[in-house]
Amino acid sequence: MSEDTRSEVYAELASVGPYGVRPGHALITMVEPHPGHEYAYNRWYEDDHYYAGAMAMPWMNSGRRWVATRELQLLRYPEKSAVAQPVTAGCYISTYWITDGRYDDHMKWTVGINKRLNRDGRVYQDRTHVFTAFQDHAATVYRDGAAGPRDQHALDHPYRGLVVEVIDAEGPERRDELLEWLRSRHLPKRLAGSPAAMVTVFRPTPLPGDRMSYVKQVEGVDTRLTLLWFLEADPALCWEDHFTGLDAAVHESGLGRVELVAPFIPTIPGTDTYVDRLRG
Image (tube, rainbow, N blue to C red; front, side):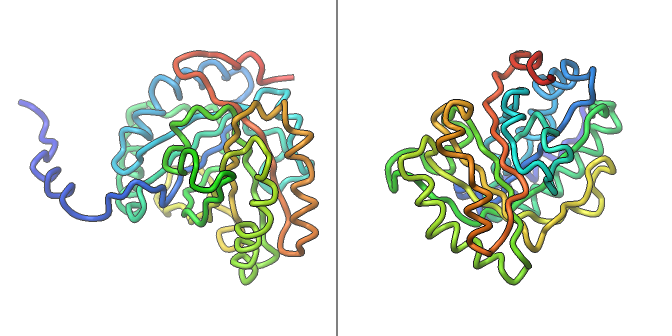
């Protein structure tokens, strides 16, 4: 006898609720495999979890996985980071877009499927979540105005690099001011003439109380902004000219402090490319 999958409700669910294409929310998850587990972790994530624990879920409409080789890890700053201790921790990051207005629906599914995966022994335990958070979209700033890919294309377009920047406002009451400064002044200036085509800005949201125990609760929910810079060049080749000094610019604004600036390059799905370059 076949399992009852409640197929009769699928058409009903599809006929109601938001179904736009813009990223209203994101899952951003930076993870460090435990020493000696790099290859096994990579194969689990590439072969199983990227699909079963992410892309197969309703309303998660695009995703991409990125890696920081040791060379890229050593470019990170500041040395004393509230996000990563040490600042080099977290050599893999995965980014996923979730349909605007579908966060609650997606969360019901993701909690349920991860409990099932855990029961079935399909969760790799020898890893540490360094920075894992669901986030709400706050802004996107483009280098070239209306030309080029939009933010809904960002995880499918073949960008050659990603820079993750995490900023804490000087208090909850100042985060909106920080966001407006980033959107209208700082980011347009830094994007002009740079290899970054766009920056997406997100606000973290609390994880549900019934999340998996190995994922710590999100910090800085009221003060933090997460910026994703999408690059058309390898970040190692343009780091000195374009990505040093981001912390100084934010400090000078008086609105916040940079807690992480970290470059990544795309993984090559289905391969172990770069796994042998994670450690010093």
